[in-house]
Image 1 (cartoon, one colour):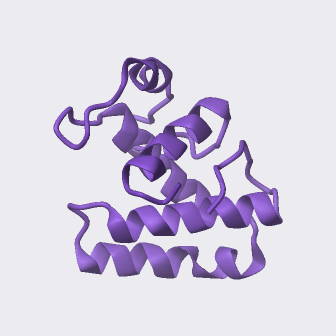
Image 2: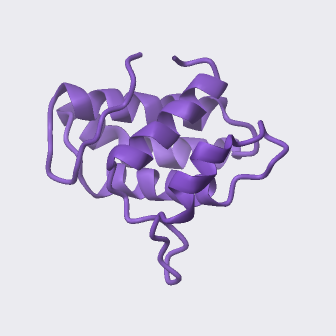
Length: 121
């Protein structure tokens, strides 16, 4: 797997496929996600994964991880200070409890950190 690069809603191609593969890796390797939730989220992403497009499902998963990274507990591994600074300013919706779903430079760095911690990079 390659490092995730900034990518945005409506994009398609290899960068999107790499992001989606990273999201799937996290879904199936991160502790604390129920098997039912893993399968539901995998099914949600499936159509966009097949077409390598960044649509609503991809943004939904990115938004979930943005929220999770912003609220990262210090016991899962401890987040470094640079990561805390990046995620501190991530916009989280009070209505959905998720991030905006866009993979800007900060979100890409944060996701890559998480992928490294779980052995994907």
